[in-house]
Amino acid sequence: MDLDGIRESLASIKFSMKFKKAEPAEFDCTKTVVRPFGCMELWAGNERAHRSLELAGLQSDVIAEPSGGDKGGDLSAVFSCSDNLARMVLADCVGHGYTASGVARHVHHLLHKFQDIRDTAGLLAALNDAFTLSNEKSNGPLRLTTVVTGTFDGANGEFNFAYAAHPRMLLWRERAGRFLELGEGLEGLPLGYITGEAYNQQSVRLNNGDMILAFSDGATEVRAPAGEQLTSQGFLELAEKTLDGLPRPVVLQDFSRALLEGVHLFRGQEGELEDDITLLTLRRVA
Image 1 (cartoon, helix red, strand yellow):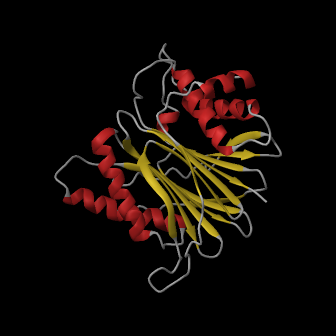
Image 2 (tube, helix red, strand yellow):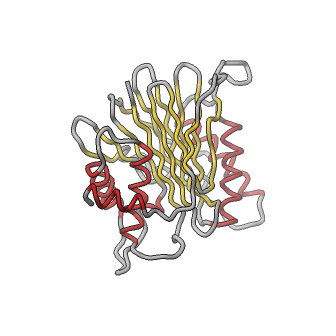
């Protein structure tokens, strides 16, 4: 997609969402006995939205389009924690619409319960055990949720991350000018399958201009009119083409809008999405 095409697409976006840039106030991330990690939620939601937030050393942007309503099963959240740390979470509850929205609210509640677990993989384990036990107490069908979570250290640029059966994030290396998949072998089981699951974690150092792109599988499983699926590799290539077509320096929220529009252009049809789509982007800045 060339620059003129992207600009024309941006001008014709039909998503009924308003962009909101959050202005960080004096966040209270002080450690206490009750809050040993000192985490404070900056944003969280599962509704149709586009939000951007700047922290010390990190820019973040999330754009979400639920399927079949204003709220869905994709939950995104960003926390500011003590010691110059930030945490992101993207959860994708199976299904969409009203039922999945209720599950997303439950995951949000659990996030607050366990937000001060510092270890990234440990957070997933705690969420999984609590979520699975709540499944066992429910008379409804089995609920499963995939999750990716990461913690960014603003002091040294280290990004520590773990997966619970979620699509692998993409890492943009500014110097190389390309995207890479992150976390081979970290798939894990989704929340709600079995208690006692142990999750693994990895870390990568982000340099100035490097980006992390997390997304729900609604972005990769869309199909063209002929039935062809975009796939993870196709989404990676679309993300690279989108960045290449935008003027420098790239404005993060413009990238999110253009990438979501690119997914819709691939889909090439009107009507509601088959699944919720959420894109969450982080970029390290000097």
